[in-house]
Length: 293
Image (cartoon, rainbow, N blue to C red; front, side, top):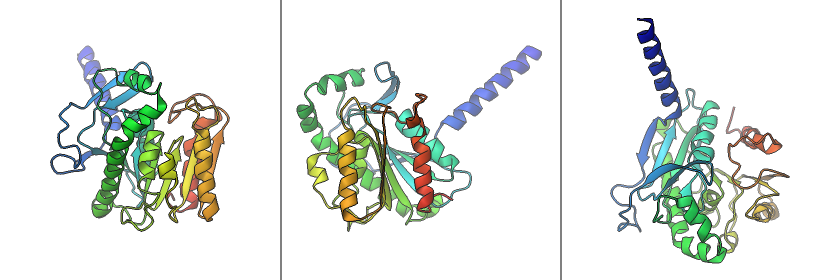
């Protein structure tokens, strides 16, 4: 009997852990096939990447939002775009883990699974690294995907605002945060979109590398948070500095946190370095603009 009780207790604990780790809701962004990729027929998958040492999602054809609802919503919503070179999504470190942290602070968090380059093997991270050996060719190959992913993010912003009452969200407190490739995705909803109904109220770019074409576009009057590491292996730290300078010239609110060490893709990874606390600085920033109480 005691053995049975222990088994039942263990199962209940495992179920509790699973419930805490799972999203509260999954939202499909489009009715039917996503516009622009109607002929995509590959299967979305998720696996642990030994190369990236984290879970990755790949072959996304049906964009979704993973919704994480706080116990006491404060009216703020943040859409999170994970990175992964437009071929994978670092779904935990730059998505779900971020969402859980924000939800614990009262923010309704939405992890965006946007469309990606087709991976032809079950080792998408390896495919990505092979493609990055010719950086220019990779950017050219991913250009069309970037535009589709940008549309996914705009659709996500519209969805959140259109369903604000369902999530106890203030339509004037809808923000976006993107990591690496995800930063380029969210910036497509910001740069050159000053008069768009899909413009978020605030944005955050983490170790992003927006294209020159994107950087040439108009800056809207919204606050921007930026963070990166000087020892970024992809040499993208100057891109964050350039983005900061672009905002600074306009006089619009902008804040930059550049860490000496942290590498590329630090996200919510623990490295026992000052960069581990970047999200606390982000929360301080949100509090300053009254998006956190």
